[in-house]
View 1 (cartoon, one colour):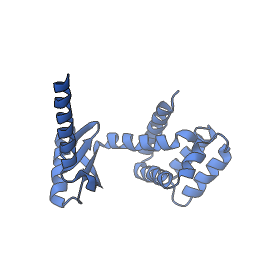
View 2 (cartoon, rainbow, N blue to C red):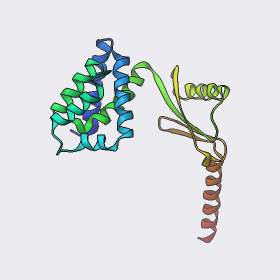
View 3 (cartoon, rainbow, N blue to C red):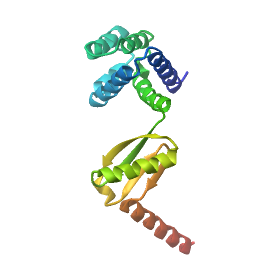
View 4 (cartoon, rainbow, N blue to C red):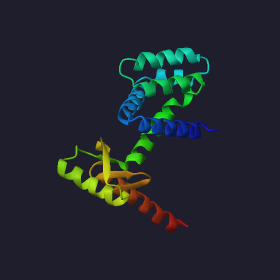
Length: 186
């Protein structure tokens, strides 16, 4: 079975258990913490993926990271996954858990990239656009700032991209000119 399928099944099982035990938010907090720690520490990711590091050490590292504020469901889940020698899918499982969590609660995640921070008015307009595109009532915007856009914005909703940036328009112009020039040559 591929790592993606394993991660998806593990995430589904964790989500169902968290819902059943009314512990969805604490488990989500733990999963987000794992993702944050992994993004800040490449060594942690390498340890999870390493076949050389034994499962006991991996489990001890997870216990040390989560024993103070980790929920029991999450701790048990980490223990089972490491004992089954599947710690290499922990990070993928955490990301898939968040995706399934959002789907479970009907939350649409969208990423908006601009050259300057969004004002409250612009933020609400982007939320309205995302609601219209996705058909979902709840929207969470991930805001990014990229001065290379020159102006405008790039909005990503699932696999849809709305590029209304000046750099995007310049790129399209360059491609258009290049295609016209190429057609004239041949």
